[in-house]
Image: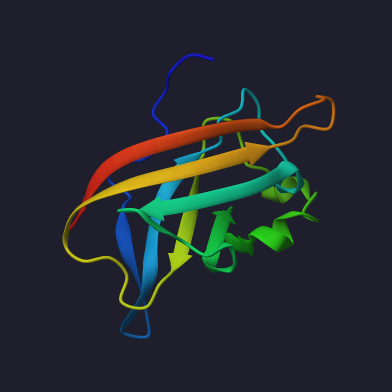
Length: 131
């Protein structure tokens, strides 16, 4: 697979709801050569500055709809496909979000297409700043 931009460099930010910072988010592309149903995403892990996010705190938003990783296991609706080349938004719930300044992100994707006898796994790293 040819190298391509995995993260949107302008999309790293803290997430605010009702005037309170509830977490952080970033835009991420699936590391696969075609669009996928969310049900074949086996796992997404997120680690920022060495701190691993809890699985239950991770959300993936596709076409404006957020899903927990457990909810994604049953999503086969074509309206919520992770289209090839499109960024999905990953949100991690974390009171107070991330501090201002530089951070290092490591995200890991596990995708299990039904027609392949193995899971496709990819580690993706990025350095970014929270303004």
